[in-house]
Image (cartoon, rainbow, N blue to C red; front, side, top):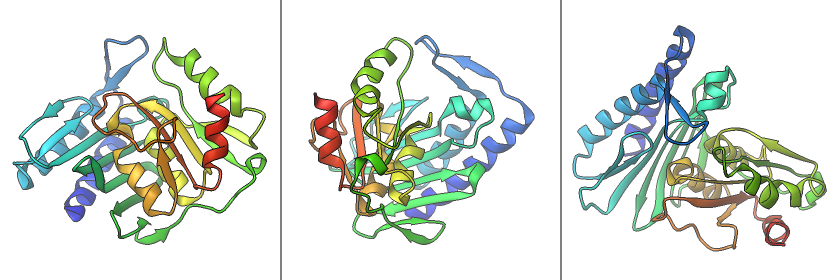
Length: 254
């Protein structure tokens, strides 16, 4: 399953990079400021076609296509193009994310950052890897020395996110950094580039990256410190190196 997920993530990544060079077609969604591109749709078609060919009895949850329920114990959770805003703006921080959940726990994850030639993957109990080399979270303990990533959701919920996440941390950390892509935030924690990452969004934004964080020695919870409930449609996601986890939780709870 891992090898198939890796291959299709690479294939989809090549396609979205090609499509950005060629020019983009934008597709507006219901929420103000939310949109997709033809690359989102094409990438999803590539991924679903390949995964359904190999695993026709599995469930699928994908950002654009929605849910395909085959009453399986396995659910593939897919973001065919995470970070559509940076992607469409010409920035490198976008990703293809493919996660596999069994019994409400991620067991496999692949995140491809195609513009950066960075393929991350993890299997439960087997560690996290970047381009074949094992990765680990960093060991920073002092919040003032930490770079913390965060992002805001769609228009209408951004003020709430800023007040809840950014303001309590703004003067407590070395720098708060917005990425525009939850998958990148997660894998950057796993790689030790970021010390923590916070965001509120959908399961497909985190299913793959969350496993990489825990397999790299980090910690993942919701904003109350509880394990992620992957059955929810809207998730508070907090990943860290584990050493600063409780301190950040105490700040955003105030």
